[in-house]
Image 1 (cartoon, rainbow, N blue to C red):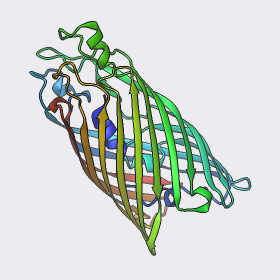
Image 2: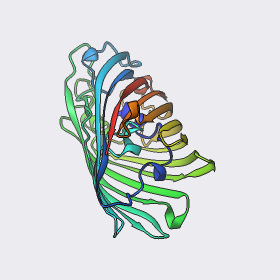
Image 3: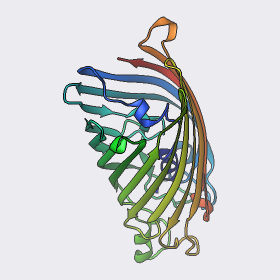
Length: 331
């Protein structure tokens, strides 16, 4: 269970609505952007790997840690304007601003009056993707392991010319060394309940509303299922997000709110067979200024966010604070 990533990946400041951010270009050729910056944050999670917390004393609430790291992302597109076809590679901006650093290799096809259909292959991004092999190991050094994800995404933007958009992402999750609970006295059948391998599916439906000139609201519903091998890790989730965007051309201000609920299939054998059901919420703001120093290709951004996951099991709690800034080269 990669709690802190599941919380942050579902949210956070879209620069405007998805359709406004990423239209298909009217001219053929390459386009896109490259962004480089830095992030300062504080994260508390018992599943997210941190060298500061290789050892824990008990199975209580997670301790926080401070992180400073570079932030690099790219969005490369090639458009065939006559056929309204676009090939994409990289961190799509409406994902990256939600802290979902999944790479996408895909194609988008605009159909007049019907919207934009898309399909693509998603895989691990350039951000660290490590978890603890056995997060429940106490009073000893915990080993890290890779969490690999890959799958497919299907999307339909501006459905039948409306303001509705939907996308479905299904990913296979593979933990390289899944040792959850191996350091404890749990029996083999109980250890099997902690297996984090499996599939993760997310369906997102949103409505993009320009309620005043250059002002956008985008409410949406996010439905998810983590069909993991361990019954105590398997869960269903439902979330509501509300994005606000204001765009003057060179200046974009956005704010985003996310509230969600996760419900687990079975109780956790290490915690009195209680289920790790949780309520998750997060808030983020993002400001982007394009045309710095008179160069239309140069932009700068700053963003801040806060999120928290409150579980019935303290060990599963998570929270984060984040402040980021950087430059954006648009071509």
